[in-house]
Image (tube, rainbow, N blue to C red; front, side, top):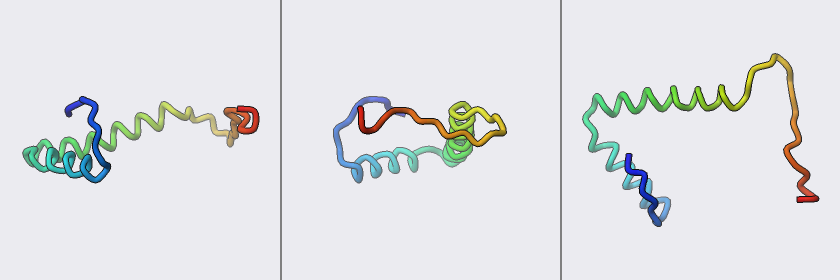
Length: 65
């Protein structure tokens, strides 16, 4: 993937990404599809360790900034 910063509309960005995805060979599209599930699962697992407890955390005071 191209990591350059672009200034474009959301619609333009989505269209560009769709064209790039559809330009890939079918095997690479399937690989990308499978990888998208693995990447998401790892991110969620690392973000919240499983403790077996229901935990509510307060990150900051919205009124005091």
